[in-house]
Amino acid sequence: MLKQRTLSIIKPDAIRKNIIGKIINRFEEAGLCIIAAKFKKLSRSEAESFYYIHKDRAFFKELIDFMVSGPSFIQVLEGDDAVQKNRNIMGNTDPKKADIGTIRADFADSIDANAVHGSDSIDNAVKEISFFFSETEIYAQEHK
Ligand code: ADP
Ligand code: MG
Image (cartoon, rainbow, N blue to C red):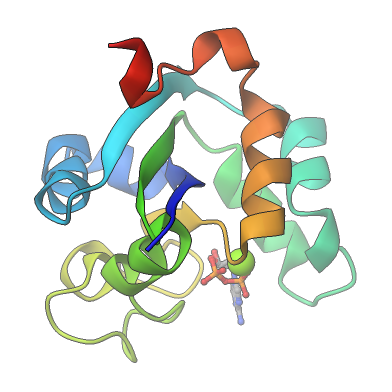
């Protein structure tokens, strides 16, 4: 498996529940390393631009309102097959459909307040990482 990077966001609902550590533990237990991180309250324009792909969806305004409702904890994860591995750990978008033991099944309340974001492809991971981080803010394993 090739080492990959992916963008993870611990969303405002999970921050309010004080479960950053519990979520990060899932990543580390699965062999993913946090190689960049920041605590950040997205502006409305940042949230709209990050989720631009969903701009025509009925839930867009609700999604943006939620994403600007408090700070998020944004990370770059690195490891073997990181993009798909993170998606597997996250579980289905709708916590009611997510497998037991996934982050969303265990920690999320609803399809909109669903605890985490994760890039859905290698191409999107590259775009999403550069949306939030410059290369100098990323500490890959070889730099440790
Ligand atoms: P994922 O986060 O699993 O990649 P999507 O990219 O489809 O899911 O959607 C982005 C985010 O938009 C979801 O994580 C969720 O917060 C919100 N969302 C998606 N579908 C709905 C919906 N039907 N109702 C409300 N919010 C939704
Ligand atoms: Mg998505």
